[in-house]
Length: 172
Image: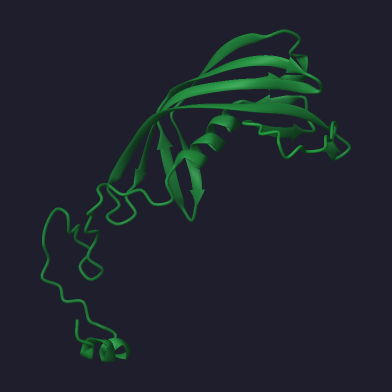
């Protein structure tokens, strides 16, 4: 949904149905996001608006070892302030007080319009683990025959690099 954050004159709430889509995570790696409802409470502030956001998510991504689908679900709440950037710099630059602990992000924008789905995608990237595993003791894929070692055993013998052979002489 395209949202004009500078036209928020009084508090209001709205929700957006976001279709199933994928989030690119880099290195030809993506997460598949199920449809979700993005709920937003908007409040006017100087040079922008304050958003309280919430959504429930269900994401599928490949296991880092065996490439089977891993399903992650949860609910997230976050707060963000959208502020206008004028001439390439923030419109309001305030001294940061060390005792001030703000629990929201500030996004400075040059345009008046903002795509709310970008907030969902950015939040999902923060929520995803660096390496998703289907289970803690996932055995992964055999590097020789390619079988999923969680589903079937293989008789492949992994050859040890001869440069590491002196380590085998060390007693345990």
